[in-house]
Image (tube, rainbow, N blue to C red; front, side, top):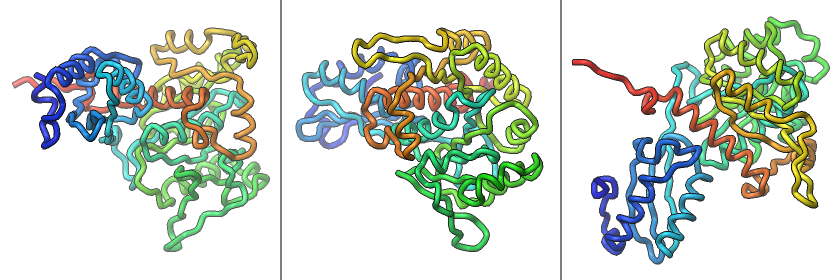
Length: 367
């Protein structure tokens, strides 16, 4: 079996046969949140070779998961008593057909109410997906209160146009971004009526010259009213993520957000519980200031996934206010790893639920 999975290149012969078999058996049995059914279930194309003093496993996967692979590489390095590295490439496909050039998958990040950290989560999810290996864009759909320009540190910058027809989006640390806040003053946008706001958003999406993107994250306006329904219906969203806090009132509104996406037939990949707990800097004790277990209970009730829990953290607030990315600055800090785990879960759930290559979506052909 494994002789077929691990191709022999010119330098592969330097890897001892017993080492190849040990790696093969370990990978076959390895399970984690991202690789729930194992790596081989992902139709992964795998090759093993020796490069100088390192064992290099070349692998192609259908969604970004650099963090999970680094953990696996550490365990394989201990097993083999020498450094094992993954050389990974990603074959990310569109899970929903649409006519917007350059974009593979659109993911909406929403909340039932304001003040739960939806926009901050959207920005950090974009950076986290990038850290995992994806090409990512960010679109601010909050026409009435665009915060993406501030969160990215691009508040006073304006997009240009190469052809006079399509806008050239702005770039921050490799994240491609577009927002109504780049084009008009905040006070002007806040007095628009619903149809005008919807048209403006449609223009931002369809009249932007997007580069090749694996994922476009849309920061939805808070709430579940007409404007949210219109946007969810008019945009070819592949799936959605709902942000909440453990507080009872936020959980009630999060349920409304899930119901809204169900109404427009947009799958909900899961729940992100923000401000889940406060971690004491001195003793490490977790204080659940806004309640405990709410996100997990909602996920269980609505048969979706708790994608992750984020703490109350001053670094998140400081970086957001200053328009800086804590993930771009240090992708291996504790809080960055928390966001990256959420990003992996989002990408893995999108593949598992909606990609036709997934075992969950495999077609049965009767002849």
